[in-house]
Length: 94
Image: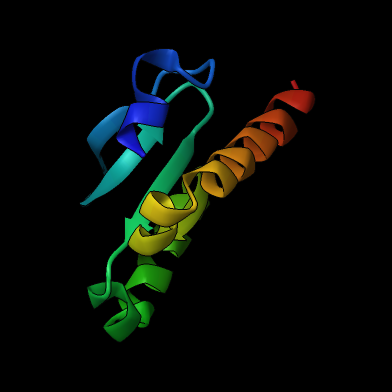
């Protein structure tokens, strides 16, 4: 997934392992306030903590997208399409 997001490959710059408040997100586009999280199997056991984290991020103006690690590797194209659709929606309001 990082190969798709790095160096502005989607038209926007993303940072990897970026701190926001008390959290470190997998990928963040600061200009759009867009967070992309990749969830491994440990996230299925701690969905409540993820919900609290997402609520915090959204309360601070961030849009959060979550993908499973399996989808990020096995269906990267779909993940990229979802990210691009979200970018289009976020920039349409500008």
